[in-house]
Image 1 (cartoon, helix red, strand yellow):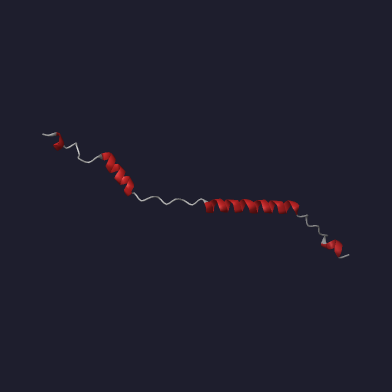
Image 2 (cartoon, rainbow, N blue to C red; image 1 turned 120 degrees about the vertical axis):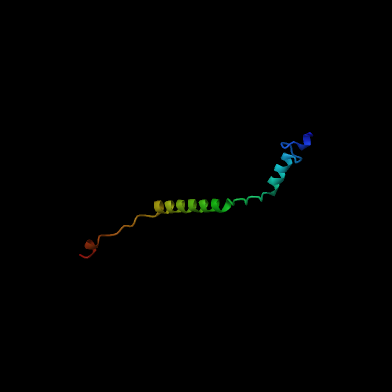
Length: 70
C-alpha cells in the first residue's frame, strides 16, 4: 500500500486548515469602556459634591416651638 493511501495520512495541511477556521470565525464585538468610566466619574463627582456640601453648609439652628410661643 503506498503511503498516500494509508488511512492516517491526509492531503490537507492541518496548520493551514486551523488558520482558515480561525479566519472564518466572526470577530467578537469590542466592549465599550468609556460609558462605564463616565458613569464612575459622575458618581465620584456627585459623592464629593455631596460630602463638600454636607461639611460646608452651616447646621440648621432653630428655636424650640414651646419657647417661641411665650
